[in-house]
Length: 157
Ligand code: FES
Image (cartoon, rainbow, N blue to C red; front, side, top):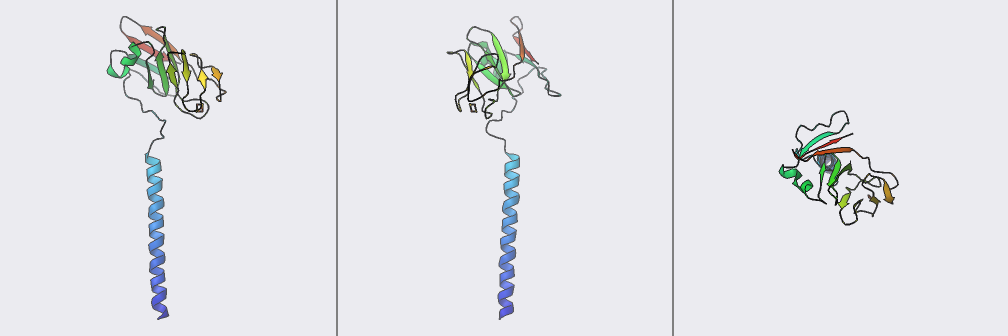
């Protein structure tokens, strides 16, 4: 009688262990397979752009559908971890898109002509420097050059 109970207890024990291990493996797999909410996957809209060795070297054709927002003043896109915007006066800017406070993607606000973080309200000048926090560090800025004849925008470090 007692042996039977021990056997049942062992079965229940191993069943619980098996379920727990399965749940842990499933949790690890799901967390490892999903991307953070703020991660932006490059859209492949670059033309000959590279991002090797941590160096940005993008060539964006504004005639491509993924980049057409940059044809209008105030438009912006995210590409390779950068926000690239056409300012309200028709110029271009490219800075790191992740807010230096907690990593939320910043947005270009044409009305105020600055970069704004929608999470906690940090604002940055178009060169990436901080206007107000809570962020205290600037957004890394990149060089931009535009050829209006070809509609090609180059972004480099
Ligand atoms: S994440 Fe940008 S202000 Fe907090």
